Figure 1: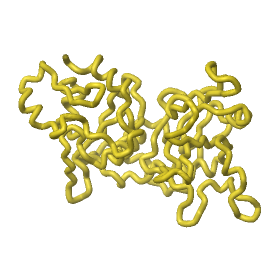
Figure 2 (figure 1 turned 90 degrees about the horizontal axis):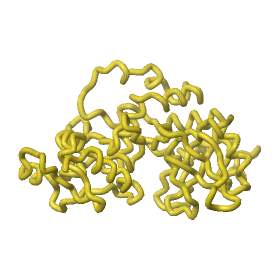
Figure 3 (figure 1 turned 180 degrees about the vertical axis):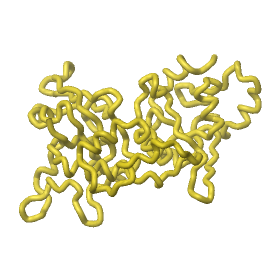
Figure 4 (figure 1 turned 30 degrees about the vertical axis):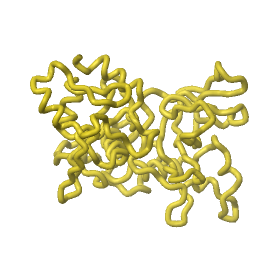
Length: 299
C-alpha cells in the first residue's frame, strides 16, 4: 500500500466523481493499484484558472475495470472517507514545492509532475494533509464550546510533528471532519446564510452561520461541499426538521406543517431560491436535494 496523488479538474473529460470514483487509462494502472486500500490527495492543476491546488483527500477502496469504457479503470473511493480540505493547499507555497517527491537531483520539478496518477511519499502526504486540515482557529465555531474533543492533543501540535499515519487517524476522527467540513462549506458560501442571505460575523470573526449536511452523517451523508449548505441557526433547525426544503431548481419550499408559514417566508431572501456558492461545481447535488425532499421535508 502507498499514498498517491490523483489529478482532477472540474471540466475533466474523464468520468470522475471525486468522492466516489476516479477514472484513469491503463497506463496508470500499476501506480493506482499501489494506492489500493490507502489514501490519495486530489490536485487541481496549476494551469486551471483560480486553481484550488490540493483540495481533498480520500481512501481508495479498490481498483476495477470500467465496465463502460474499454481500457479505462476506476478507483472506487471508500464511502465516508472523502473530505474536502477546509484550507485548499497550493502546489507551491512561499517558493517551496510541497510535493518534494517531484524534485529531481538538481532541485527542479521533474517530468513526474505531469503524471495524473503518481505516488506520494508519507512525508509529503503528512505535509499536504496537515496544511489542508489547517488551524482550528481559522474559522471559529458559531458558539463557544468546551467539548473536550475539540482540544485533541494532535490538533494542537505543529504541522510537521505528525506522521502520515497520525494524519490518517485525524481523517477518521468525527470531530476533526466536522470542523473541516464547516470550514469548507462556510468558505464556499462566503459565510452567508443561503436561505436568508444574511452574512453576520461578530467582532471576534465568528460567523453566525453553521454548516448543514443535506443528507445527515447518520444517514451516510458525505462530508463534501455539495452535501452542505451554510445556514443560520434558525434556518438550520428548520431544514433539519423538514420545515423548509428545496426544489430541484433550488427554490426554497416551506412545509404546510409549519405553524407560521408567513413568518418563515419573510425570512427567505428576495430571490426565493437558495443563494448558491461562488463555484457552480460546489452547488448542492440534485440527488442530495431530492433525498432531503423525499425523506426529511414535510410536504
